[in-house]
Each structure stands twice: as structure tokens, then as C-alpha cells.
Image (cartoon, rainbow, N blue to C red; front, side, top):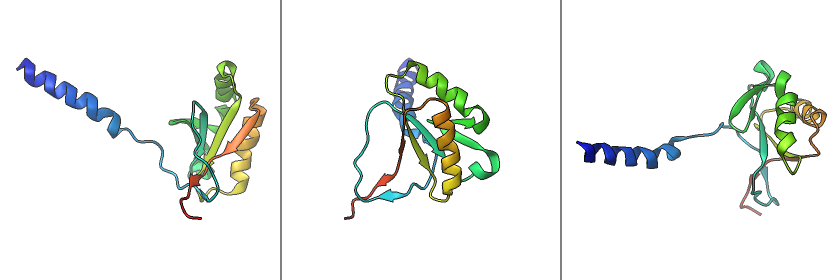
Length: 121
């Protein structure tokens, strides 16, 4: 009985990280971009932003009203005050710039726009 439980525990420990998913967005594609790596703060603006004013800080949903305070908290301990901003392809430029100005107001020094990397040339 204990052997069966240990085998099931190991199976679930291996399978659990594969089950986790992030936020689904349709990012625009850039032809001449390189893949970014490292620890970073990511903000994602989903298509539903225009109705509910919620963005994602990593995988955590955050209301736009408290976004600046949450970013200030993250930036206090960060060595680099950089944020990567991504948005669904259907998000208009005005909505993206609204979030961009909130980030700048929170003390972010550099905001990078995130895109998918295309293998076509």
C-alpha cells in the first residue's frame, strides 16, 4: 500500500508542473527580435482590459487602480527597474499607452514591448 502511494506521489510531483498554464494572449509577431531571458517583471494586457480594467502581473490578475502601487513594491527590491509589457493583438494602442504611463508613474525606468519571435525572414 505504501509503495503504491509513493509511486502516485512521484507521478503527481512530476506531472504537476506540466499542468500549469499562463494567460492566453495573441501577441504580435516581430521579424527581427531576439529572445529575452532572465528574471523580469512582466505585465500582460489582455483583450478584456477594456471591460474590466484588469492586467496580469506575471500570472496574477491586478486591477489597473492598484497597478502602480504593486509595481512600486516590486521595484523596491529590483536591481534593474525594467518592465516588459505585452498585450493581446486586439488591444488598441491607447489602452497599451494607458498601462505604459501607469508603469512610468510607478518609477519604472525602462519599459520593453514584448512580441512573439517569428522564424520567417
